[in-house]
Image (cartoon, rainbow, N blue to C red; front, top):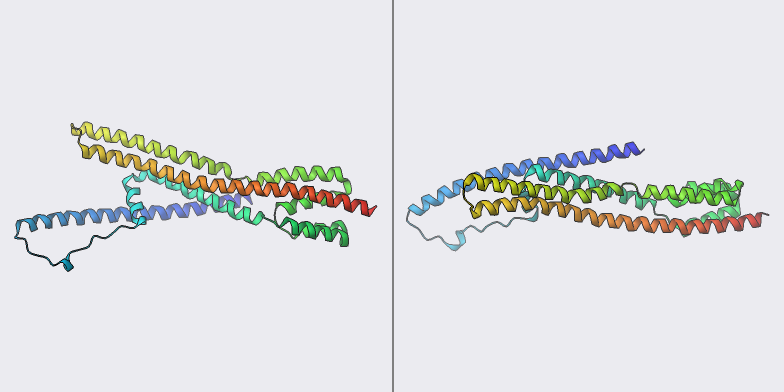
Length: 278
């Protein structure tokens, strides 16, 4: 089951990465077309400057088209350098894939413990241990699994039941926290890759200055802008994943507290049931 989940995540990440690559290649084509168009416009302007100027009505003047946020993002992505920006994008895609899987898993693990405890108690009064185990089998979530492990060892004594609940509760807590390590790793690596791209970009800028033999403001400003874009994208990725990471941690904490409280309640129910049985 774990391998199946891993391959599913890998497939989703591969599909998203392929789509992002196609998007970047398409944007590169658009940039090349825009460059060619700009060259034609420059030539047209030079020709127009050599001819007498004529009055153009205000209605016929072209209104500059505003770029959307998506278009600006793609442009800056290409300006930052595809070789350096692509790993950051891949980290974002993989991190979001893990986040989505964890959110779905934790939401499915959420159980109405009060309703479950009431159902188990009623089943114990009417049908005994087997009826209570059937209720737990038909309820999803870690709390129901913990109850089932305790009920399954009721014949061995309450001490064994308590140890079983504690041990299996630790196992369920580990399952809830699975995947958080990779998210925290992505949060740490994304800014590092951004800083690495910035350093490399600065080196390339100084190389361009050395080749030109002059410190031109255009060369320096352009090189620094491109270098800093990788850091900006790396920090954005880290911020996005950090927000989801904190949400997952808070969700896991609430589930763990829920499991601990319900474990105490099920022990009280079993102690009461054993007394009435005698």
